[in-house]
Length: 258
Length: 289
Image 1: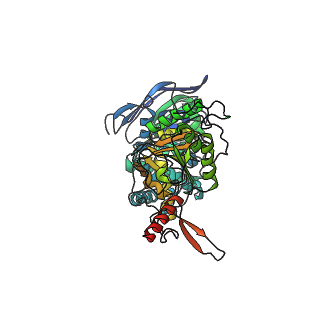
Image 2: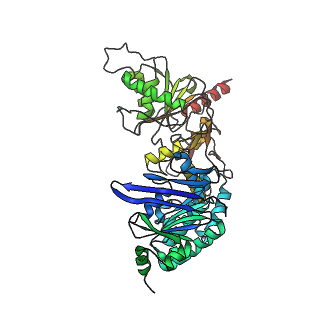
Image 3: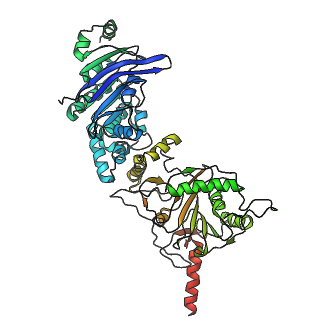
């Protein structure tokens, strides 16, 4: 562990007209740490994530990132060129809907290779080799390399999206409900995969989910959001086993027992 | 310089009014200053349909003067409908001499080919462009493609070449093959065969590209490096033929394949008619000697 956080978030606020989507959110994310953001639909989780990832400009507050190339940078005042470079080299973004994060018209290999080509890879054989390698790492059969994602199942698409993001070896990955809309056995495989990848690659991640089970499995720390505010934050086990805030207690209590 | 002395004629010199020509010239100057960058311009209605060369004809109208000699080719040929009518149009409205000989022309308006005869300094090649945006088929949003150009984020173009190799075993694109101009902008060279791409590179002539429907002008100034995109292990290659031209015997030009009878007999001919006739002429002279 180093002594500087990877991501420093201070008082991030986003309003849509008079409606507050998220309000005064502050936290530090340390290298190798996975932070979960939980809360019900409409609690501002995804808006917050978009603000953190530079996809939306917050109305107040700041997001600073300790980049490998140029040290601590303020994400939002960055020029668009530099921010886009950052997002396709040092960051990854896994969408809930894999179709948004993939190019559905080109093969799996091209999807994985895109980031490599965007940063200057010009050797077809090597790109293909790396793509094959990553296909294996996300547990997709290697003979599917030249198939389009349209021919993939939901779970495979999600795994392909993960591979496409991780191929450039990012340091920080934002995930928006990566297992939403998948059936439980597929969810379990993806969670397993993500847990392994996060541990092996020493990734940091911010994970948005409404599923406390996912949060329990993947995250080290947890923030609970309600109505755009963080109502409780702490170590995941602590928050889930001994919830302090009434809303968190309600959330934990609403998990369906099997 | 434009001639504004003809007051009694129904049309202004070179069809377009002087203000329009000035506007197009400004776009051309900007295009020349930023090689490969697509400059928007206020395209006018022309007396021919979109897709028949409205962009090229507007560029030609803006740069043509009485001293010019115009050559117009369509698919390499001087005698096809489109070439003949555009040539006649300018002979009428701009009072210029026309020619079919590449070396005699000062302006060559072209669709789908670059002449085989090497061009020289002082010549201008005007391309008719149907789709100026090389990223169009990969990224449908204009706002996004402009951003990609502005930030030179060209990964997606390479993705399309990767996909072509993955599917066909080689880069299967044979025309409108994307090029990188002056190490900066990716440009669509208009639907010329990739055979002609090497001719764009460091060409002594000025290349102007006009897209009438999409109202864009772009340019490659003389001696500008133009590189066809490829992969290190799948380098750019041009088409080759086992046959040679059945009229002039050329084996170094772009050949058209023609089916000449019902039993499937094939004939290969130069697509550049001027080049082919020139060679036949020389061969006759040599034979006579």
